Image (cartoon, rainbow, N blue to C red; front, side, top):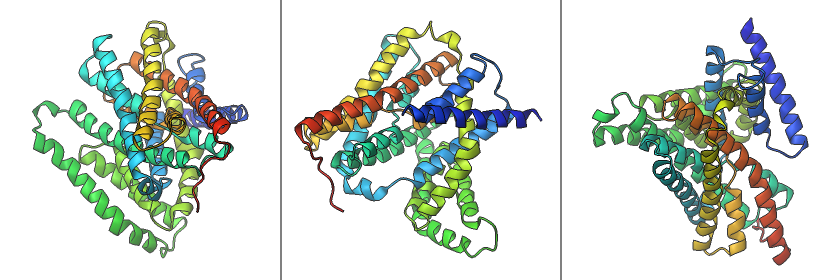
Length: 393
């Protein structure tokens, strides 16, 4: 019965902390992380990581990425594909290279550890930015569209790099794999994802509507999610990659809105909170004082890398400096994807516990700073351009 008590505590506490953080206009995901830190081994030691928590957390992260895919908008990405792609690429390159150089030269980390820390810092979560854009009537502005488009591209780039890097550095026979054997399974996965997503997912979902069963559509959607997560793992990629791409395929169907609401209810009511709490449970505050210089430097790299990447990418595509600052600030926030990369990294023993804790702290700090930066730059542009350039619908 212990697992029932654990699940009861996790769900209750995450909802209470989410409410408190939402009241103060702070990211609710930070509140869920704090539940794991406060009530886990780091402080009160009331909740512990076990097989139950691990399994629920694994399902949670798969559903989280599945939902991110379903809520994606490839139409907007294609409309602003050039600035979005440039911003996304530079937003991955700058923090990844910056972190890699610092980790290798200053802290003498192994190449694999430095690379994965760079990947953690390259991840973006715009859920916080979207809320700020809505509040300030900038969601439909050209800056808002580029931020959204770049977030889609950023997620795809980051997840692909995560899957490839995991197979290279964490594979049991990675040293003996030749280049062809390494690349071919990945190419096969993307071919299957494209073919399956474009031509098979829509009819499968349509057929599921004719099944005489409760929640037939959402049930078949979860089957597709878990099947593609398994396929990705079988072909040497991360399971979250399979879930994300099948979600993107569903986002192009007429069932997007219905499935988004139903899968969110399943994921966010139980499994996803367990995932975030499980991350907090792995935080050990004992490592904080010894890693303070590393934490401060990586926070600076995380902030400057995304801000500079977004600003430069926007400027290269003809945006003003003020618009570039807004786009850069919109990409600063870390969140779900950074936590996913961190979790994959520690599970594959590519970073140790102290680095893992440092990355969680960096994620929390950048997520708290990002909304403030975004508001400052939007207000600054308001002072110069009172009416934002809104896209005509």
